[in-house]
Length: 193
Image 1 (cartoon, helix red, strand yellow):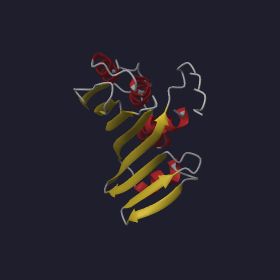
Image 2 (cartoon, rainbow, N blue to C red):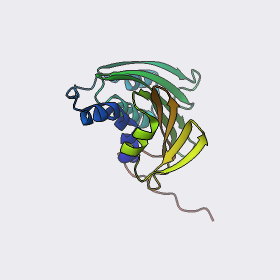
Image 3 (tube, helix red, strand yellow):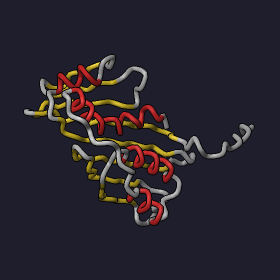
């Protein structure tokens, strides 16, 4: 999984802090990451194949967090063979956010992964787009709803929804056939003749 793509999900936690710093308010220094409840729960349920993806996404989502909790749903008959759905409530020093993480094991040993980070910023969507999304391509879906995509990172998007007096920010990442880059390489079987 591309760390830069994943860090865009976590980067939104610094969005409000970064904008506050630009206005002269000092953001609190980062604290130690709280114990990763999602990874612990997934492991205890017997989820193995997509556990590395869950661990990476969860760790990135929790960077700078004070605390978090979660709702978790999984295929109870096939915990390691079915989809896993998690919704995290995350408390940062300057904001609260929601994050969703979904994984689905594939037949070839890979995983389909999707993650979203949902927050409300006390700024206009136009100011967020100007400061944070320079170089992104924008598509207007509704007068109040715009989606931004970095052409170099087509698997991720940032949706900005005008919600006066602020902006609803949804950062989304999807990757099909994700394989754990830390896993040992397996030999490709020869083609059948």
